[in-house]
Amino acid sequence: MESYFLILMGFFIVIANVIGFVFFQKKKDLYFVAFIILLLAGVLGGLASLLALFIIRDAFAVFYGLNLAYYLLINSLIVFLLAILITIIKKYNSRKI
Image (cartoon, rainbow, N blue to C red; front, side, top):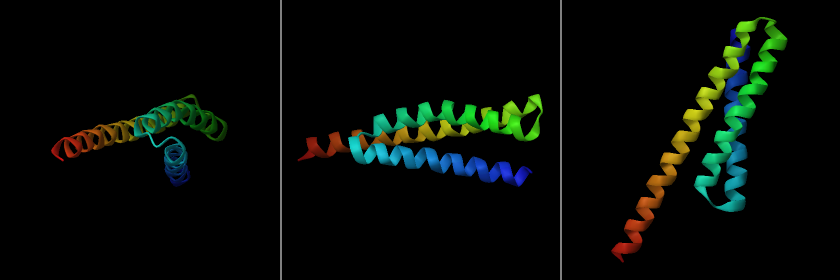
């Protein structure tokens, strides 16, 4: 059962990043993608909590969804820091020329 939830966690993280990539292809804005992944952290974390509650039928299954939401928040933070880094590099390169 534990490996099932680990695979599901990886699947949700990949889904959030794929949705972020689709939005990046449309908007070309990394800050917007970081915000979308931040919103998906709550949505997918809640969905994972409900799924775990349905499968395990224990109140402590909610912590699985909270754990997934935590990983997605970290993922959103990484994308946001990359967006800041890319913005700084672009400003430095445009000023240098």
